[in-house]
Length: 254
Image: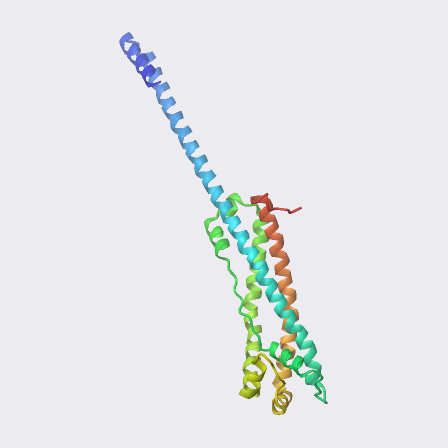
């Protein structure tokens, strides 16, 4: 191509036709400019393709995070349901005048549940990076972006609120060590658990704070079960939508 153009240029120069040479020069410049524009367009297309692929990988990584979240949230729900059930069993006994325990080991187990306090961890690193890059606005689906943001906003808010709910459980844990002797604690935690001593049960029944904390734990368990079930439903919905768009082999969203 270049040899052909050189021959034309040489022929025009030799012919002495200034007008034809100028037109040729303009054409050659335009041809070069078109070539540059095409090269830029191809480069932009390649860069866009790479960016879209990077965004897709980010979204699939986000899906993995949310899939892990669903398992973690379900663990919280199961934990809180155990506490709720334990509180339902133990509160009537603590509030009764007789303080009669029909099954001491069941009572001890329920009392122990009141002192359990999970630490809640949530990870928004991938979504934060996607948001900072702005790629979700350029390549993502607006309705999906909104659902992801709603999910993380709710989950993080529940996790922050959980800190105050943990406080009453931690207080209950310290109260357990205050009320029970080391012998009772050892018997409780052994492979063959045995009932508390008479003094141990009396200490639990005579401490007003025990029933107050147990009721507070029950109410917070009920509330947070609802919160986390909402978060789990949102997580499952977001996960299905991401996979439907970015991983058709897994996506089954209807």
